[in-house]
Length: 483
Image 1: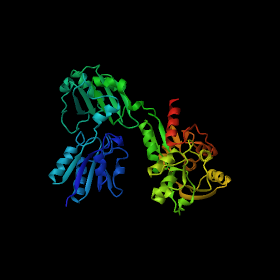
Image 2: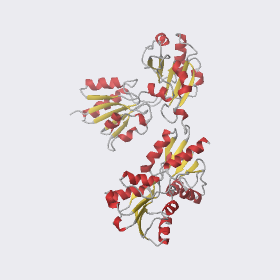
Image 3: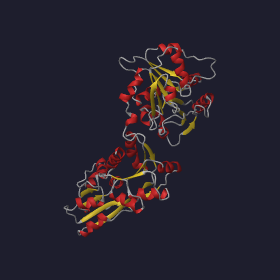
Image 4: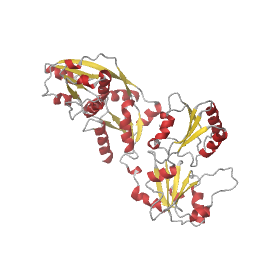
């Protein structure tokens, strides 16, 4: 029985531009045959057991012959597997997806085409250039800038393109840029017409150059593939409409040392602001087996971290079990984690540190307190409650353990502009992983306890968040970058 093949467009590079359908079919793939120019995180959507095969091509570099790609498609489909052919951009726009579909049809193998966002639309848009614009361009033509070298002569009608009443978008034409400009001008396209080129579109390293058609090859001498070229009056709109490269953290690299399970939201926020994010988690959260006492036997329940909140909810399973005691969260992030499980904290200090929680509990009656926390934690809260005469029971629901970053992530982290730290444990383990020195990046601390740990290791924090939350950390970083 034959399998099935999905010809899937992965978009231009930003993983956020993968379509919902692309992610859906990737999630059930047995085999993924992928290009090199696909979003970095796209393959994470495939099942862990899926076979991942690189069939990519790099201009001027190693090549997997198209015939070999088609052979692999047929071989795996005939073996009854679900195959995803994952292609950069759109499979039917300069992607040879049509040829692959022909081969599948000839072999009697079923297939589906999942369109993707093509670079010819995405690159100009991310550069602030609309390919059509009322009064300036009512049509757009997509042209390959890299024709099949086996063809005896060009198939491009340069005179027709020169007369085309709209925007010209050239794919894969970096090395041919001078020839493209020369041919268009020679065929009658105005030499002073606005033109632009966009490198690494939709990615943090995106770079755009705007010039005139005649001068663009010279002005864009430092541009490298992959890049898209735009010719037409709309290119002049970039100065007014540019947005991607003007985000507040564009051109800055930021290290996230938070545990991988908690890092995604912070990393995503930093990327939205334009940062190149280096994920170098130095710790991971390891649940601990624990016997949670009956919460109704306590008049105060203190939760000292979002991880503790999540583990607490796993242990109690039913939020109604926590209806008895006053519930105190160490800060807004912990309160949000509790709220996600249906529990509203009664006490939430503005400062997300133990000292802030002690102050917030000053007028709260307590005789028997339960504190859920990490295995290793400061005893500031417990000591303060005991000094008030309360009986305190501590339950450790998790611990943080070292997870040294990979060599490439460690090297990138040391060369970054900023390194962020959201806990004392991330400080300890990250500095241990990099040999105790952090001379390159500016350090950003989430709060006093984390700052104290940095100082204990000889690192003076450059920035400390006023609000001791991930959002507060981002705000502090933004203020430092702007100032």
